[in-house]
Amino acid sequence: MNPGSAPAIFLDAFLINNFVLAMFLGICPFLGVSGKVKTAGNMGMAVTFVMIVSSLCAFGINKLLVRYDLEFLRLICFIAVIASAVQLVEMTIKKFSPALFRALGIFLPLITTNCAILGLALFQTAREYSLVQSIAFSLGAGAGFSLALLLMAGLREKLDLADLPGVARGAALTLILAGMLSLAFMGFAGLGG
Amino acid sequence: MSKSEAITLQTFTQGLWKENPVFVMMLGLCPVLAVTNTAMNSLAMGVATTFVLVCSGFLVSLLRHVIPKQVRIASYIIIIATFVTMADYLIQAISLDLYQALGAFIQLIVVNCIILGRAEAYASKNGPLKAVVNGAGMGLGFTFALLCLGVVREVLGSGSLFGLQVMPDAFQPWSIFVLPPGAFFVLAFWLMLFAWIEERKRKGGKAA
Image 1 (spheres, rainbow over the protein chains, first blue to last red):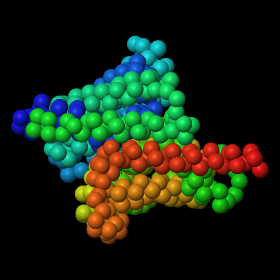
Image 2 (cartoon, each protein chain N blue to C red; image 1 turned 90 degrees about the vertical axis):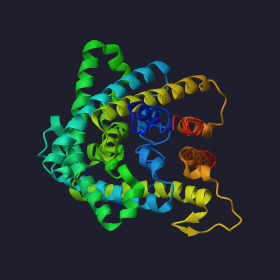
Image 3 (cartoon, helix red, strand yellow; image 1 turned 90 degrees about the horizontal axis):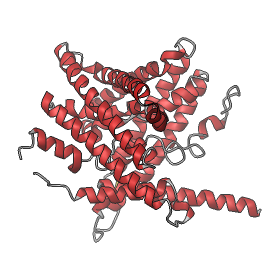
Image 4 (spheres, chains in turn orange, cyan; image 1 turned 30 degrees about the horizontal axis):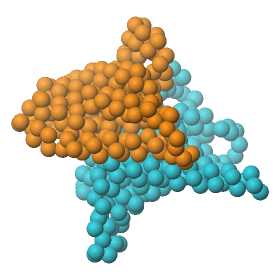
């Protein structure tokens, strides 16, 4: 596959360079919201949606900034756009599904400080992706994030009942699991290449 | 958190151990995992984050009576983004190698929850001097945590420390430690170690 083609970019962000497990973006929600499969799925959807919106906005803004030689404002503009996009998603979810809104709780506004979103905008700019490539990239990153979150939530639900030494409970166990998942995802290297 | 007392040693040391941003509060883990493949990268990341923490803490604290409550988070983020942009260009000017090694993670300091957390929870409620001292303490605690990971990963993963070889020639580097899974494992083991120390302390306290 041509590395610049949209399916290749999607696959790369989804599996090979998974945003969470290989690039370490979005670790906070990954550790925080991965307790239950259902919440994890919803969180994944919310993040994917914000990713697509902010990726499109970032693409447009970058074009504008480059045109007027204002690249040093890039970071400030990106973060402002993401914050507004999150606000929009928050209002939408609150209106259409109050139950989901309560389940996501504090993690919804915290999507703003989710590095996966800003990272996506920064990477697509650094790699000079076109519009189609950017969309493929954000879809892949969102799907990859959701997949990692769901896998982790599934594992943690099972391990709730496991008998563990006290010091390994909680965050340490989650991190070891993440390490193993990351190890498994390394097996995707070279896929489609 | 105490609000109106003078600057004490505790203002500074709080972030070092008792409320260490990484090991105790589990904040800002993305850079902790991503850039700690060598000790040098860890140190640079720690210094850059401390710089942003201190500067943004100072400015937020100065403006704490000016910024309306409704738009405070947005204002903090803009302030932080300004300083991160400065740090970004500074590192680029000082060392291009380092800049390329850290990549997008310098700009991602903006979304490091430690900085926004400090701005919201501390700098917006305390005077500029206290905010600076507290920010410096938190920054040092963060750097300490980064170095904890960076040193272990570099020694085991490439047999060197700050680029100098420390392991004998016969040592076969465990390259898994500089790869992504290694970061998760090393952090997990540090967390277990700290949990174990805390548990020992608690038990010792009861016996005494």
